Length: 126
Image (cartoon, rainbow, N blue to C red):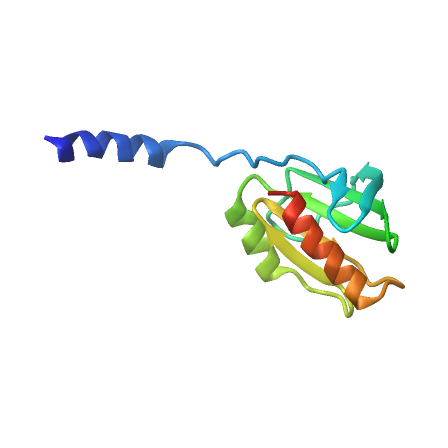
C-alpha cells in the first residue's frame, strides 16, 4: 500500500517546474568586506544558445574594487551547462553556483583578492 502511495508523489515531484533560486540578484554584501556599489542590468546579447533569465554588470567596493558579471539562469542545470560551454578569456575567473554563472573579467586586482571575492560570493548567494 505504501508503495502505491509513493508513486503519485514521485510523479507530482517530477512534473514540478524548476525550483526558483533563493537568491534572485547579486548580493549586496560579500563576505570579506565587499559592498555592492553599482549594478546595471545587461542588454547585450548573450553569446550562447542558453539564455539567462537576468544578468547584471556589478562593481563592488572593498579591500580591492572588483567588477563582476552575474548571469541568473532558470535552473542550476542550465547554469552548469553554460559554464561547460563558456570560452574563458585569459585571466578571467568563471564559476557557477546554483542558478548563477559569475564572471570576473581580467582586471588589475591581485589574484588572492579575486579568489577571496569569488569565495565570498559563493557564501553570499547561499
